[in-house]
Amino acid sequence: MKTFTAVVERCPDTGLYVGYVPGFPGAHSQAETLDELNRNLQEVIGMLLEDGEPTLEAQFVGTQTVTIS
Image 1 (cartoon, rainbow, N blue to C red):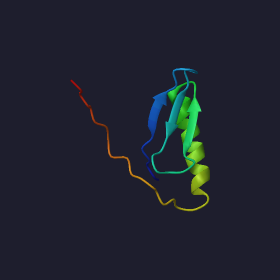
Image 2 (cartoon, one colour):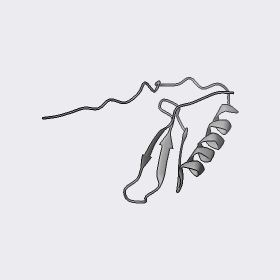
Image 3 (cartoon, helix red, strand yellow):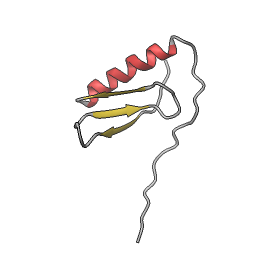
Image 4 (cartoon, helix red, strand yellow):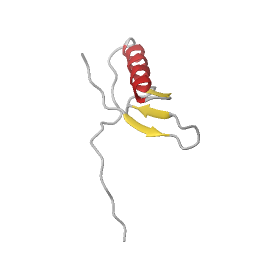
């Protein structure tokens, strides 16, 4: 079992949730609900892993709040 962190955003134009795994080329999807997005990402990542273990180009670290005065 492998665990990947996905970044999820909501497109203001379409209202769709868009998710991607930082540094994992091709590991992205979109959906109308968060549950559907999770299933889509599981499917995409599973297919990508069939080609072998990926070499991630970046690693998700976290988020920061930036305040500008």
